[in-house]
Length: 304
Length: 214
Image 1 (cartoon, rainbow over the protein chains, first blue to last red):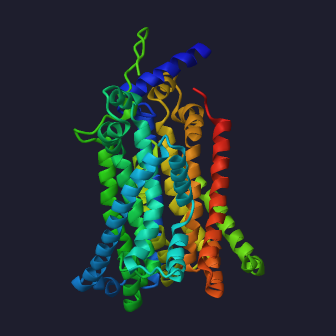
Image 2 (image 1 turned 90 degrees about the vertical axis):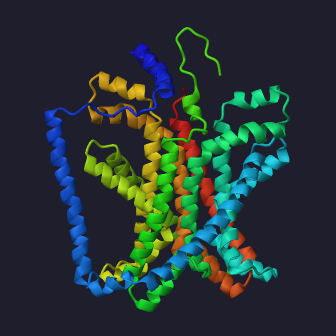
Image 3 (image 1 turned 45 degrees about the vertical axis):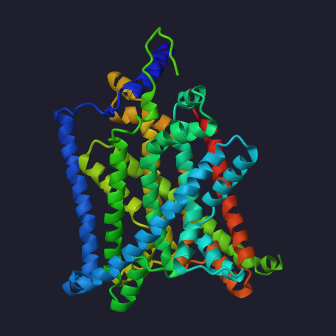
């Protein structure tokens, strides 16, 4: 029995390296299984439809589905009002992405630095920023800093706390990208006579960043979600505009459903981009470090 | 320091609310998340699609929007629950999507060869999952799930925005009286860091206990 386990174990390494396609968990269904799948599909559809219908009846009974409650959202001024909010969301997110991205890059390099003090400082910053709620940072920004005589424009009261929190997340993603690179890359750079800095800048980072791109885009989605905290600081972004709109037209459900859908479409596009980058890397991007490992041939010495 | 001693009662109650919310939503999201992950790898296409849609929805919509929708808007449709349970339910459903993703990433770490081997040995889907895939993938998922739990604890702070009196909101209230924002919010931040540290350390401990040394 143990011999069988051994063979399976080595087979895994080879399978992981060579095969990129995912093996199905189950065999091609036979006639009996196909019938069972059809039955269960019908049951699941019935349950899902039942939930939707129950929800619609509940909403309808309170008159929330009446046409006159939804028609305001067919008019351009309402959309214009909300899209100005979306533009605020994009502005704040772009600022946080650029600032947090740069800060995260330096934090990642700092955490991998050979100088102990830099390493400790970066690690400390990352661990603290990861484990304090953003809302608390925003309150600190709103109430704490004015006491010290620092009063920033509204957008920075949102952007600075988000940058503090997201730079730590960016740093961890970039660090994972650097660590995922085969060690030989760095060694090759150094043995060609490049300095540490040159190796990082010319060899390691370009590849590590390309490898980390899908995760960075996923973090961008999370960052766009975080900008909804602009609601707290009264910065003109999508959720805040939705709030103001709903207190004006008293269509709470309809307004927030529309706001939810806008977020869903906007972030959904970003998520789809991330998924596409993950499954179909562009030509210049590195093969996944996992997959780059050579398939071990029995009896031959394994390099790397 | 006096200001913390004077209002120790409300602060401890608020900390209790935060911890209870995190624990209840944590356990709930583990259960729901496991079910969603199971649906995502099931042989029934409709179930797979529904689970995919569920995850996409909660991963792409901000938690604050969902909280506001549930707390302020749904009562208009006659769906009215007490405040704290509503936020816990929203938090549970939201984090369940992330738990499902963490478990699925764990499933992906199981080698194709193992799945092929178990199929070659004639295992059914249930046997393959329960005897081969899940024991390994749950172990690989411990650390990612720990990270989701830390994020969940941080996210309980958003309940303050819809009026639940938990740690962040209590700190804010104390600050309105005492006007010592830096001291008060730093202290609250330290408490959150302590909670995250406890979760992180327990996740590390569990992982070391169940990890497979290869």
